[in-house]
Image (cartoon, rainbow, N blue to C red; front, side):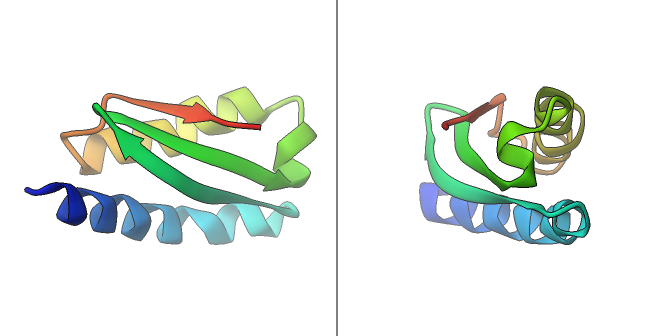
Length: 78
């Protein structure tokens, strides 16, 4: 896959995850994809939630790594 296809797939996965975050008053915004790393911003209630790290690693990162083989890590940019 070329970079545009990877980014499109990443956005598709995030679009499927977003409603679950929105149910708790938060959301996730895609920033960029570089060298296997997806940079996102957790927003709303997710931005200062004590479970944000778990949401990022166990939810968002896990889903992206499972569905987009080129993704190796997800980083939250505040």
